[in-house]
Image 1 (spheres, helix red, strand yellow):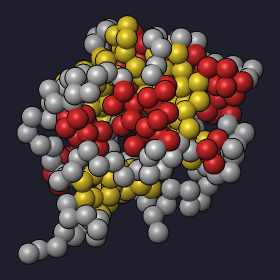
Image 2 (cartoon, one colour; image 1 turned 90 degrees about the vertical axis):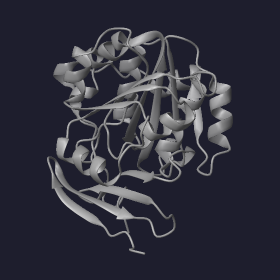
Image 3 (tube, helix red, strand yellow; image 1 turned 180 degrees about the horizontal axis):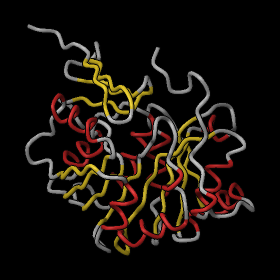
Length: 281
């Protein structure tokens, strides 16, 4: 039987590599320019390897009753980890996936094809441009996991962008974003302030060591017009293999402090990760 071998290809925004996991038979790691982007187990798509992906998965589990199909918009495709997860955990869901790197999308579809019936339509487009053209009230959940290299692009950080996200979401819809920062959290706090101008409810999920300023890391922002089930979310994240904390309410307001929302003209990308923060080996 042939062993899976790594695949390397120049894509639109760098050099992508698919590497087989020696411990899981049909699992693959996707990197772009050496930075880990996605992990997929084709035999067990509900397995989420990365910490941030597990936290996004926890939110997806509690936004509606278990198994209920949802209309999900994914900004950022990677190896289509979360669309696969939604297809298995919420069969019958309708999903749109927007990825700016068309060559990356081709590589993933060629080597890690979506299963039949995944209900996902793939689009090659800039995330914000696609969002601005999308119909209002068309999504139950919007998942933003967009990185240019290792940084969230500036045009996906402003109040104008947050308003577009709110417009596309239904009234009880939920916005999720994978962000990355380190102490003093200027970027993370600015994002919370920005989304707080558009959405009534906010929550932040992160590993306690990151929030204490011990290291650079990912944090998941959750925003909605309706109360979030933070108790259920806290139970899931606290009992995870990679335990995390859910901050909301007064704790989060104290964290945001007096930071101002981001305007388009002032927007900057998320900070550059320190060397080795997300590297492989």
